[in-house]
Image 1 (cartoon, rainbow, N blue to C red):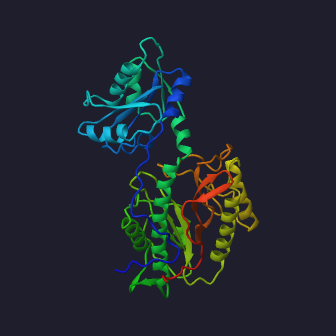
Image 2 (cartoon, rainbow, N blue to C red; image 1 turned 135 degrees about the horizontal axis):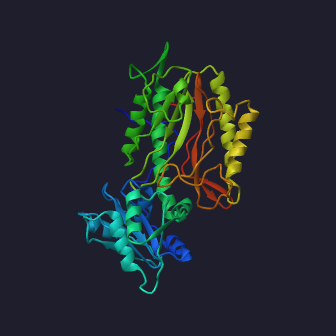
Image 3 (cartoon, one colour; image 1 turned 30 degrees about the horizontal axis):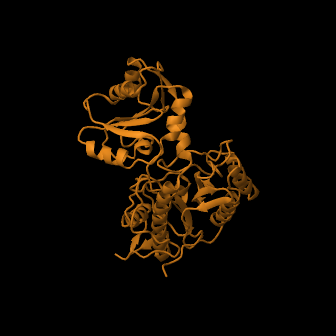
Length: 408
């Protein structure tokens, strides 16, 4: 099958950036400033905080990362000794933290092993008993740590560190976003070559569905080494007003087709891109909504720069949509969500663009205004940008257009 792309898809580097090593100094400093015995995070390969801290792609069995002011240890799961050493120790940055992979007592629960590491790494002259943990520490791990004599205190140190991306993290985000654009270009090419026939769009002689379009997007990204995270949103007409629609629906001429593509790269970082198209539209609500959202998108982007209050970006977009006659105070009709959120090793992380805190250089956020009517359709336009001192960097560019354009 031909895999032609609509114009505007960026070129993609043939090599994936390696997962960047994480500087543990902010975590170590939090421990020192709190006068704590250490920091402990527990989880498996699906726990984003753990993946960020360790860069360890181990199994779906719990392990722990323990950090003190000058040392850190990963409790390697059984059969993963070499991988834990290679990814956590060998790949360590020069942050002044001595790392090790612990391989003893691998049948013990992760919380028990974490307590043992704390006992071993602690200063014998220090009677500190407080342990910092993320708020999401597993309950059983918390009980094991408390049974070992440690008092737990929640910290936002990991979440705070994740909000400001390093240049190595930005390289990962740029590449996965470029592949995301390639997936979007494939969807646009399919829509542009589909033929209206009564109430259907025909593609290769068959009625085009949201599922067929989703498969085309996911296959294109997979050909560049990036897999769908099972969350490729494609809605048409009324289902385009469903913010996270992943079902099957027929696509009809004239209605909005909303695609929100957010795959996860092999390095663990997400892309995020949304475009809305209409095939053979005669205008009406669809066109009016598109014009309003496009202007709100541009207005919000113009407001992004370091020092600007995050929530004010949302307010700028909302004001623009209000000026075009769309509601912003409804849970179902109009602008029904925030204008953006942080993206990294989680698809949704800090900073929120409804927060009171100022944006900082290195923040990576989506800008995604939208308007919706469950009886008619939905329109959303989204780009992924990095905040800079004087504005923003679009991590990959893709055209904004209402009518899909055929491959050149």
